[in-house]
Amino acid sequence: MIGCARQRIKYLEMNTMTTYIIAIAYILFILEMLLISQSFFYTRRERRTDRPTYTPKVAIIAPHYGWDDETAEHAKTLLDQDYEGDFTIHFVTHDKVGPGYDVSYPHLQEIAKDVPHADVRLAPNIVDNNLPRSQKVQNLITVIESLTEDVEVIAFVDADVAIQRDWLRLLVTPLQDNTIGATVGGRFYFPQTWNFASLVEATWVNFQMSLQGDHWLTMVWGGSNAFRRELLEKGQILERWEQAAIEDLNTTRAVRDVKLKIHFVPDCVAVTRTANRTWRQIFEFTNRQMIMTKHMGLWAQWFGSLSIFLPKAVLVFGSIPFIGMQPGLLPVVFIPFLEAMSFRLCSRNLPKWLRDMPKVRDTLRISKYAAPFCIFLAGINAFYAIFQRKIVWGGVKYEILSATTCRVLAPMKDKE
Image (cartoon, rainbow, N blue to C red):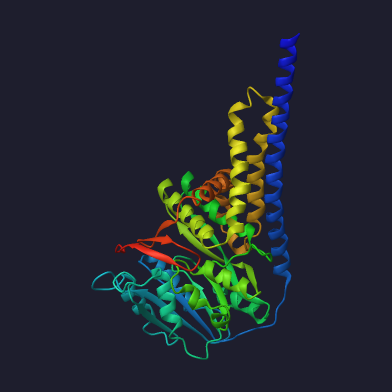
């Protein structure tokens, strides 16, 4: 009798634990879906919003590092923007360690030589000049300090992204609203091959668009954003960048500190084509993003990954081996399928021109199966960021000391 009673108590305890595991896993999934749904409905509202024409003079800053055929194509796209106002394009690269300059410099000069509204700047190398900031930040500062007085808006675009002809118009138009401090476009990774590692990385990046909207979690992404020039002084942008490793997270903090909004433009998507990626490359990239997010003070985004994504992934993947012994855990198995469905919902936020590309459509269909793993990866990245402050970016090793300070630890490697 006593043995039976003990077995019954043990059985009830197991059932109770199983119930808790299932409940927690689904509660965490529901929280995730609430954020995704908010962005989904925001995108629908934003696409129905009609704004008056707004065409201030714009300076586009395009930092470069390295060169290939795709980079050349992206640079040429900037020259032909469908924008009714005046705009100038400032390509910028840097001196190499020692004599010479980055390989992109002569190519950019060739592209810009017959274009009256384009030029090429050469920034000092941070290693040789002992500058306490990242090379990208130095490149941006070099251009900003030389802008003419009539520039009203500054836009930024990375060299490795493909944009549409309406990119500038889409980013600039919402800035006529004085409650908006900065606009930001989406980042879309488009793997050219379907090896699993590349799909996980692409899903990890593309999922972030579902966290952008009209709420306080929206962030500035350095690869595609714009703000009115007055934010430089009002938000103390250059002061924040003076010793910083990354510019966009500091711009995010600046906009928030002056009580303005960051406005996500869902139809302004910049596409990065990726080749076969290794797991080592992916962990380096995703860990770097999360380390910068945490140690630059964007606690909500980091803590959300740590407190929602990591526990949910551990509960789901940790429960699967025990389903045979504890059938009550079976409902946990459905969460990865729900994650795949939620990623498909996120994909509906992409602009139609992108979704209608045959290879993109096929890639999105395959990528949904990587969604559960990218969520798990984001949780691991958040946990890793607790113990690490050092990153490698653009061939240079940095230590993130605070939101506005970094230490350059290793010299730059040439990228040919």
